[in-house]
Length: 214
Image (cartoon, rainbow, N blue to C red; front, side, top):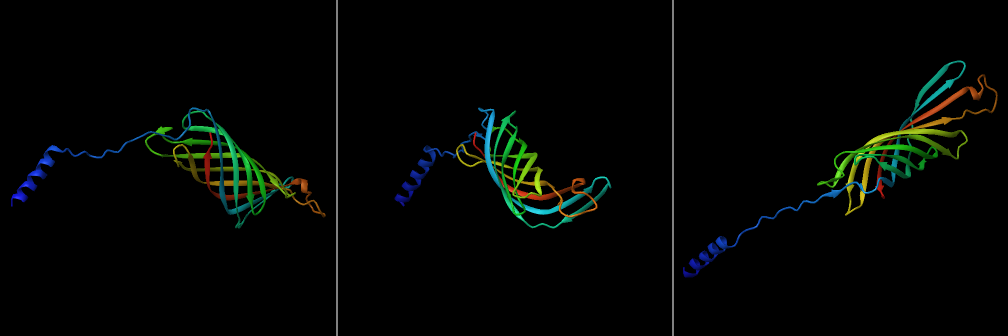
């Protein structure tokens, strides 16, 4: 009984004299955009899956037009390097170029890009959302019937601070590849090849990652 009384007294004394400290979470600010430099350098790549293709053929002087869909099932990828200017902590505009590998033909895209990031450049969270818009020409390789076309792309994603300073943009978007086809001039036809405009519109889904280098 004496030991029990002494034990209770010691526990009570410790509870009375020893304060209990609550663990507090230390908050810090994360830099999601390097605003110390106005110029931005980035590189990245994407996986592209085709959803289908639209063929549009116009017969010049006759004014006829043929428009028909074409089921496509091919995939590919894009690798690019870009440079942009940071107008604000949210808005970046620049140029990107690289190599686009597709099962139906390879090309070299060169396009203007606009990116808008939501939230502050320095904030409590390690991520922020963004949207992007791309548009420009692309030059096809290895096919005489495909010379030059264009692309338009739009989508959105999430910028994540992967390490202490390394940033990564994960994005998902839609891209339309426009290909100007050259009709065959071999043989005899009622309409000369020079009077025919043939374009193909391929609809793609892009899943990619972009890494800011500067």
